Length: 131
Image 1 (cartoon, one colour):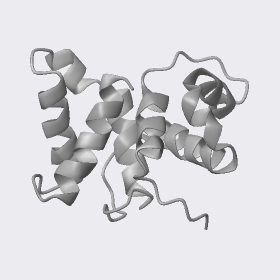
Image 2 (cartoon, rainbow, N blue to C red; image 1 turned 120 degrees about the vertical axis):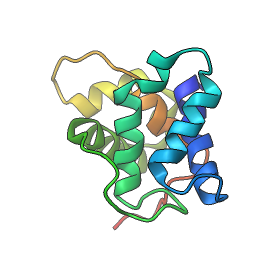
Image 3 (cartoon, one colour; image 1 turned 90 degrees about the horizontal axis):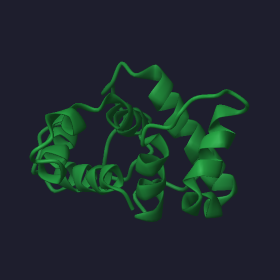
């Protein structure tokens, strides 16, 4: 699991344990802990947008649906990945293939979106009830 995956899990825990008042603050606290000497890593928008976009949907256990990000593309990538993971959970162990399936023929370099999504999935933090 990469550092942005660790950050996503830490952010969920920070929020659900009351260590952060908002989901956005939870992400900020988590990346500051994981990347203490790298403001550029803390500010990276793709993993943040993916995490907050998934959280918006209400699919993360303990986090209510809401409005947490303006990043529509990264939200879509994360939610599409969750659909694919529901159908084929083993994709959580193959982020490169998951990314290709999410893009459905488009060409775009990944930027930790699948790391965030698959880490939340593997940690059991995603509501797995389809509906």
